[in-house]
Amino acid sequence: MRRRTFLHLSTSISAVAASGLIARPAAASGPRPQLIVAADGSGDHATIQAAVDAVPSGNTSRFVIGVRPGTYLGQVIIPKDRPFIELRGLGRGPSDVVIADDRANGTPKPDGGTWGTSGSASVTIDGADLRATNLTFANLFDEAAHPEITGRQAVAVLTRADRLVFDRVRFLGNQDTLYVNSSAAGVVARAYFRDCYVEGDVDFIFGRATAVFERGRIHSLNRGSTPNGYVTAPSTDITNPYGLLFTRCRLTSDAPAGTVFLGRPWHPSNDPNAIGQALIRDSFVGAHIPATAWSDFGTWPWRDARLAEYRNYGPGAVPSADRPQLTAAEAAAHTPTTYLSGADNWTPHLC
Image (spheres, rainbow, N blue to C red):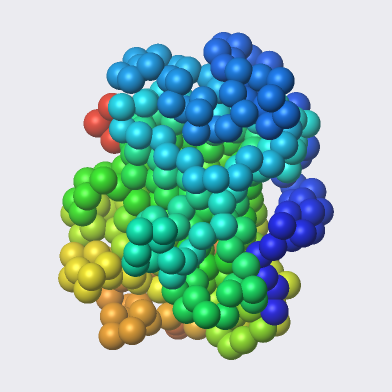
């Protein structure tokens, strides 16, 4: 069984190199960093949180925090009053800068109780218009080392803000790696993931946000069990037509053939209005996905959710009556532009 450990960071780096995430220097275009974070003390700050705290409250323009190569441990919270932050990794590739923590849902809190799923997040983003590029977010919770902890949801990144962009970013974890959410049920929050790598096992991309993954690699870990896991668990509000969109991605795994589901509909607190929406289109689907690709979530049937595919290919893209497919006309209404534009015509995918 594959577990998250500090050593696993190096093995994930090799996997990402093979995935097509190109190791290249951070883009030279754009404003120079206003602050530098360096773990060795050679920058303005030694921790990510200290740099975030130094951004002026109510900031109204892009504030670039450059992060030199290194591993930065400890929870990071980007509050609502710190919008327009850019976290820019200054290494040659995303693996050079790692921002991580190691707590899970069931990890005890110092003042009693446990952290819960949201509280387990290594990085929590409440500040709108954040941009992150050329770095790694990870939750290093080691399941094997903590058999006493049964609440194993361990989030690498929790997003609750609108208009977020992740460019050449890795998200590493096991269960519940990437929690794309919003500030409240019925509130739309958009996030765009370009050329990103996300790995995990159970429900490792989940939540009610509108999130577009373009040209990414979505990698399911081998848990050594059947089922081996679920890629997605959307909880999209019924009032929102757009949940999770994967376009021109690669869905891969080391798990045995037919042991991983594309997803299942999550109803937080049994919310009947959380009618999850997810679409995988124009993407490579590996053999780990079975002919019946979607799964029920407890008493909630997958057929009552909004789960579909369009024009996928690969050994796991198996024609089946249990694989809802969009028509060409329906697919034309499900593009990065329709998901992201909103009333403000936000088009980060065209930049």
